[in-house]
Length: 561
Image (tube, rainbow, N blue to C red; front, side, top):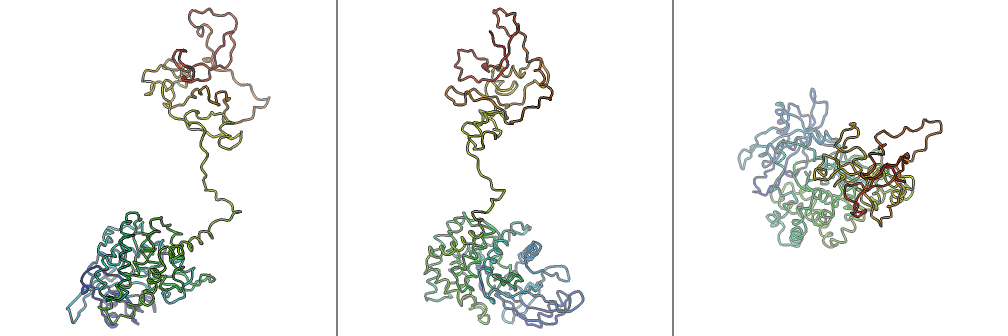
């Protein structure tokens, strides 16, 4: 299915070249002499399997000569875009055909065709390599093959996200009948069904689509769809592994229905056609869904729209087949291949009901997830991250590198000897470094700032103001249980051995002369000062202010005796 814009039916004329004419096209356009020409079944294009013999071609090499219908041939840019997408997917490792170039170096060429009824029409001709394998419709379908088809559908759309092309906007095909978004256009063709019960089924599907899909299109994830992964466009061949997977995918055909859609559209299309060929249609949808979600997991909204979308694709295929049979009665056998079991599958879905069908699909898909999940004794992957418990206090109340070790370790569950650096909040108020916005507000340097040399006075460069935002421990409130918690560094290093050199004395600027430390109006003592660690208000405010509101810092000062 490569055409289907909602236009006049006469515009979709299928070419009718004979085998000698196809051999002549092969030689005149591509320079290959045909040894054997065989027609291949097709929907609205014309395909030939040709064997050529000649220099550079290889003895008995097989090709597919593809002649597009008149409507598709009128959009040469779209055909060139499809050829580039095929080449891109083949370079990405997918089993797609290679597009051969003409004598003039193009991937497609236009040729005239004389129709006795309507005059001369132009058709684009392409030559592609012949892919080995058999269609899925000709082999028994099992769960392993269904799972692989689901993975293939999701991988194609996922890879096409990286496809870049200057004419990519041509794939926004607004009136393309085979895009599931345009299902309401199907009303123009339901007259081909007559007035029997099948038309009532289609009208029921249309109502379900308008009610459950159209309002939710904005919740779906957009992508570029292949759009036609049916049971004749996916080729398989015997697998060397055997066992539960006797076949593997060997080829993907027909990119004529490519258009912008949604991931859930591709999943619904794959499920639809695999249900046609499977002897157990309902579980088959779950196997395809499991394979699809192993690459692209569906969201809750997309899963909720899966059932009406599968019914919609059945309606599309069955109605358009009946309509095309009226235009091409000679091709009825190929056109009605889906209708042989398609109407029964659609009736089965609607009779079983949405809830029952979704339960079968989702339960089958969950069985694959349970098989992939590790057992209770399996080792947890190393990249699994578990969130840490929250801290019992704000991060800004602890400076980098210092925290009550036992308190923090107990809160995290690490034990008494394991701590972690807590990122502080930016410093605000009077303890901000001089020159910062907080200090420029008029606050004088605090005691901590004077102690660590952060004032603007003279001194070594290493004692100048640090960058703004350097934290200082604020004073705990009177009822805080951490008020008397000892300050302990993060690292619990062992003490140096006795043979190690003694620690150097504190810097000279730490020893404040007694005369400078004595408050004005108080007599200085003659005895030698004694040093000990005390807590002194770290702000320049008077002591009359409550001590709980003023931050405290540990300083070295003399204690009067």
